[in-house]
Image (cartoon, rainbow, N blue to C red; front, side):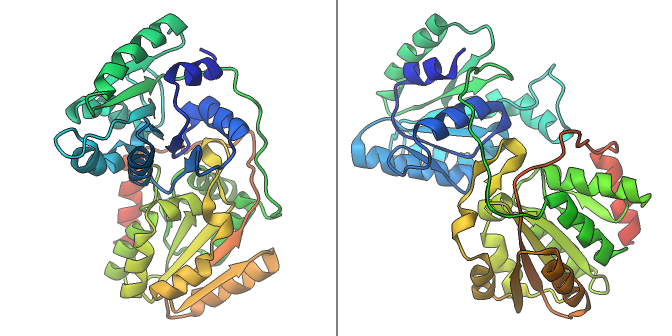
Length: 371
């Protein structure tokens, strides 16, 4: 179905969400039509954030908001759906558009398999009526579903369109870029060169894929790395858990700006605990690049200032490989928590592969190395 027709049938004029590759057609359509406009389209930090923002929109206008998300974000919406939107509380009607990664019978990455199995069940358990949109869904089918949904929404209940792979088409082409020059894969290569045999916890998406391929190219073991292939926003907390239990090891966290924004409270916990053996590297391209390149707000905030306010003893921002190498070397020998924000361009190799080991193998090898 053409994404323009999909949006027309839904008939809303306010969208907020966290980008998803399954919903790339919708994301590009919204960026082309609205860009980032707080009255019509906001890319928020996490899916719960989106849900609350949608509630505020409804309270101010009386109209129906739309929240879009990958199904991995369902966990983040459970609390505001159950304790804010639900018709037993404030009865705030909302349309959710959910990208169905890991749909049973459709090959996907390991972190999506179980989430895909429970996607529809979780929505139904939250009393959200669902309609599945596939490549064969017609405009008449969608219009009929939306007509039924309007009656449900009028009662202060919530509804969801679950989007199968390839269901939305004909999106406008949108180019996502910034003025930074360093490539993420090269940044990670420099981190690996300095960290040597120190354990690394890397964030979800292309960063972990690139780290895996760098180890392969170097002929190095993968036992040094925990690849956080799912659980976006939690790699720094995983690294904290490792660092405090292994105080004799220097622990590195390779993070991304979208991940940091998603659960920024983890920076406050890191700063309060001040693990002296942890280096937190945030590769900031101000984009959700792994799912298509849509922007984050990280290009307009002061991550170094936030880190210092959270209690990080050391926090710097670098824009060149000369600066990066200097700060990596200094962080390695310092006996204090450090943050290095690295300004990064948008882009990755077309032939970038995926880890060839399973998540369980990764965990086992990493744990054996730490012990």
